Each structure stands twice: as structure tokens, then as C-alpha cells.
Amino acid sequence: MPINVFFAAGAESWPDYQVPLSNAFAEAGLDATLSDSAPDPASVDYLIFSPTRGTFDFSPYRNCKAVLSLWAGVERIVTNPTLTQPLCRMVDRELTEGMVEYVVGHVLRHHLGMDTHIRGQDGVWRHAALPPIARQRRVVILGMGALGSAAGQALAALNFPVTGWSRTQKTIPGITCLWGEDGLRAALGRADILVTLLPSTPETESLLNGARLGLMPRGSVIINPGRGPLIDDDALLAALDSGQIGHATLDVFRIEPLPPEHPYWGHPNVTVTPHIAADTRAGSAAKVVAENIRRSEAGEPLLYLVDRARGY
Ligand code: NAP
Image (cartoon, rainbow, N blue to C red):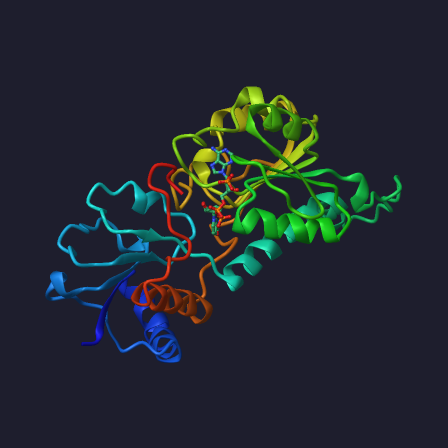
């Protein structure tokens, strides 16, 4: 009997995924039937999902062995009360490469003060100060998972002194690893540039509040490609207005798309990017999905299994 795989990740992405998934299943040696509809939910063995699908009832898929997310961040899936099946999130080489490039690009923008020269094409020769070099600029990354650790290692390779912070203790070559509340205080105190790559969970809600923003060096920069709820928006706006935070580059927001009237738009010290830091790419993500189905069918442990209690 072929394995039944239901693509429930949104009609708009089906044309992008149909061929890469079919090819990846064949390469993995899977005898699978792939469809973007499931007339009999009880016959579905695996469900490929993304929150762009909107409201979804997982309960009729009672024989489904795993829900395979195309997104790395799963807060909108793991909180669905109808989900009882194992949930795997997306960890993928090209997704990670995209995030590393976004983080390195925006860190270098602020580190080199590129805006001064890009905006200042006014005949003024601004050679006032010795340009800084990376080893003099301390970068802190909150979240040392698949994305944070890769971004941290790329920045460390450019000589930035990198500190990473996570829930559990870690050892990552080239990165000073801190954890726990004391570790967070120490990390924020040295964050000339802060990158947030934490998941959105009840524990990380408004992690960057007014008190914690106040621990950062005056004029420091925040780059948030993690999730909007990590930041208390009112506290950040106040810190930007007071100069405590010099600039915020924000890719993710509590409400997306960011409403046109939101004060982040047009704030002189905020850069808004439209949740483009790292998109999942069908070609490489299809291979991750196929490998997880192969593993499940072979009785091997699933990769990137989400811990429901932790929420990521
Ligand atoms: P991951 O591998 O699950 O890593 C999450 C990291 O956060 C881990 O190091 C974890 O610590 C840490 N963490 C979680 N809760 C914590 C807490 N309460 N205190 C301290 N540390 C905590 O996730 P990932 O693949 O790196 O992705 C990170 C996030 O990036 C995703 O959840 C998603 O929100 C976001 N993302 C954004 C985009 C975009 O385009 N903007 C694209 C992809 C992903 P432990 O290692 O100790 O568990």
C-alpha cells in the first residue's frame, strides 16, 4: 500500500512543492501518493503543514503518524488544541543559509555605519573617526538553536566577539555561551548589537521589556528576525526615543503584515523588513520532509520533533 501524504500547507504553495516533494519521495525510495486534498482524512499517513493554511482541525486525521511543518517557528501550530499527532518543525540547510545572510548583512550594516554614507551623498567628506573593526564590536545572539548558532558562527568567523544565550547550557566553538537569568543579564550588558533568534513561547513573551532594554549599552542596536512577541513594542519605542537603543531592525511583528499606522513605520531609527529573513525553499525543504517520512516508516526517530511542553 502506498503511503498517503496530504499537502495541507496552502493552495498558493502547492505548485512550488508538488514536483520537489514527488522527486524527494522517489529519491528516498518512498512509495507515496501525494495530494493537496484528502477526501478521507482517516487514510492520511503524513500531513505537510504551514500556518498560511489558516484555521485547521487536525482531529479527523486520526491515523496520521506525523505533522511535518514547512516553517521553523511552530507557535501557531503547537498551540492548536486539535493537534495530537507528533509535530516536526523545519530545519533546513537553505533556510539556515538565508537567515545567516540576513543576520550578517544587517550586523555589518550597523557595524560599518553604512547608512551614514548611503544617505549622506551631500558633498560632505565624513572621515571623522577611525572605522571600527569587528573584533571591537560585541554581538549577542539570544537563541542558540539551528539558526542562532549558525549565525553566531558566521559572525565569529568575521572576528566579532559573539556571545550566545539559550535555555540550556551549550558549548559552541568560537562563541561564549551563557544561559539562565544571570546569563541573560550578562549577555545584554555586552550587546553592542543584539540579534534575537528565540521561538515565540509563553516564556519568551516580551522577554525584551523596558528593564532588560535598560541593561544594554546606550545606543546599541537590535536585530529581530525571531518573532514579534519577543519584544515589548511600547518599551522598545520608548527606548528608541530616549536614545537607549540606537536602532532596531525588525523582520517580525505581533501583527503581520505590520499595520500601516504602526509607529515602527516611518520611525527614523527603525528598519522594517517584511518577514523575509529566511523563507523555506521547496527544493531543499522537500528533502527534509522525505527524510522524516523515510525515518518514520523505518521505525527511526523523527528529526526536529517539537516538544509540546516547551512550545518549540
Ligand atoms: P531552535 O533550533 O528551536 O532554537 C531555539 C533556541 O532558543 C534554542 O537555543 C533554545 O534553547 C532557545 N530558547 C527557547 N526558549 C528559551 C527560553 N525561554 N530562554 C532561553 N532560550 C530559549 O529554533 P531555530 O530553528 O533556531 O529558529 C528560531 C526562531 O527563528 C524560530 O522559532 C522562528 O520563530 C524564527 N524564524 C524566523 C524566520 C524569519 O524569516 N524571520 C525564519 C525562520 C525562523 P535550548 O537550545 O537550550 O533549548
